[in-house]
Length: 204
Image (tube, rainbow, N blue to C red; front, side, top):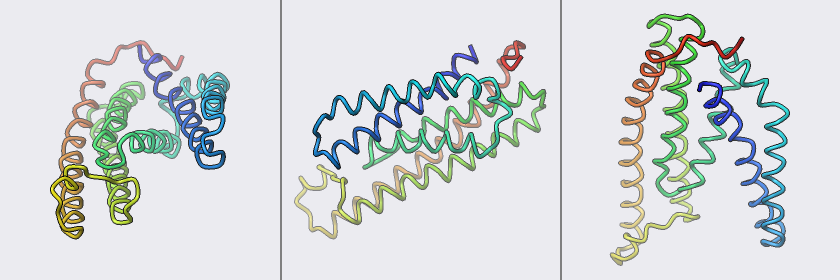
């Protein structure tokens, strides 16, 4: 089961990222010309990348460097942020994967609850910074007036300065709630994945 989850986590990033990049390039450089074909090409390149590199990464998953895991997390963070730039609460989901990974890594390395606590704290810190950065990006875009539109604010026919204030307050409030919930869930997922880990080692 762990092998399947790792394949899904590590193998999902290249196709999704390359598909998004291809779509964006087609929209920007070609004004949407050949949009479907170029997007599918990006997807296929991602799948080819999966076949070439993912099996080796899965095999060494729990001994990979922090930089490698953080890069994977950052990729998913960007993808989830792109789904809803206005209020990127959904960026909490990559954090859940980080919590699961921290618990499983502790188990496969033969660590105790002290190591589990350490890895869970590290995962929480990285995800806290990452999620905070996504909300910061949303605030910047809101200030610049790009791709951010709060329809409920517009419908109130408020003064522009008031709209900016409500937008900022809303983003900050959602960010605080998201960061708090994420912190708790990461710790919970880490403990659950450690406690219910099976003795079968996928690295052998």
